View 1 (cartoon, rainbow, N blue to C red):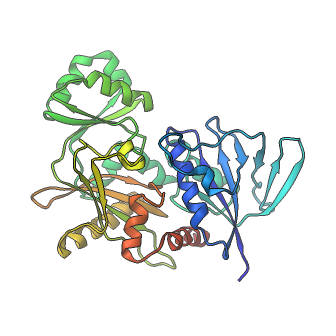
View 2: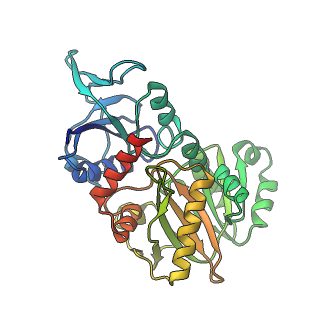
Length: 362
């Protein structure tokens, strides 16, 4: 079988730059090299497309030094519409090199300019096939406010809460505090458009609310404040179907907090104590099926195209409350999304192949 060429795209301008880079390290290690030739393309924090090293070790996730794409002086030029699909690069000495024809892009970008429909629109305009979510599902899912609107319209339960704009807080802080007080003693403050728990705070009894809002508004001008939902934190992976088949869901995994107050950035990525990731989750068969069915419904509610991780709270009464969808979830080998699919029978390498082939088919 003739090899196809995949441009693996990572880094980016969002606050999740390092997690995207770490994801690339895992993918570069596991991608099927007998099936695909790989061209690693990094995006610096300033937004420059550079030709990166095909060296997974360079992007290992390390708490002492988070990986990142550094400007090495190269500049990648993408193919133009209706032309050849050759990727070209200008090297730091000024010479131009043709890297050959690419078949598909695998965007491993999180957050703004990568998971919000922007890069997806860019490749649609250039008529280059790409894996993962499309424009609409990416944009809706990154913005938690619009995610809740789409899920509510589909009859899926979401956490009670309010959406705040920075101008509201600056104009009438007392009214905002009163509205937040009405949500209960414990609330979560989170940017509307950020992932990996960046900018998220847990507020008890209004203590340090101002600081929590400051942190969230540093990430986004729109912020959600939600009631704390008591229940188990369960996550389900979803993959779009191929050849006209419906989307399918993985076995659920569970976040078990032993000492942390919530599943924060350190607990997710840096091996912080106080949290266990259990996959498959210890749940009865009926609940597993309800979770998988609801996950697919949530995916369809946002017009899902490639993949998503659907995050739930399962209340003591058995109610399923969707917290959010991630259209490019954490994809490092230790992340929940790959772990759920491995438990379901799909290896990490096979999962990467599935994403690429679905993108090519679409």
